[in-house]
Length: 127
Image (cartoon, rainbow, N blue to C red; front, side, top):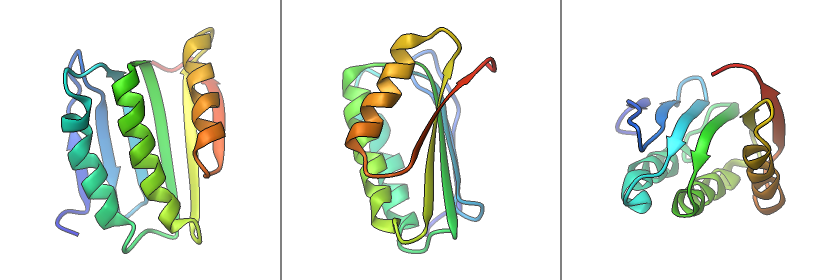
């Protein structure tokens, strides 16, 4: 793997991304409404493709969106599907949503029905 970590600062259109191969912790947090979602998510997907060749014993993906648009959802789905390649190891998806944000809760439930990985959909008061 070219780098054991990947960090992208958030903008008003893109989420903060913090991936660490050594700990198996992946965090995506914020708003995902980039003008070109495939372009934004491509480096993340490529990084994860490298990661699955030598994953940590446990991989935990924590996702907390304020908002995610349709094209970002498709790219995120691709990223999560790459992780199914390491299903022999423990992989957990923690989909967090702010209390009362039914749209983000439902988005997590939709992902849960499509992605073949253990999903934990949890309400949080954290921002």
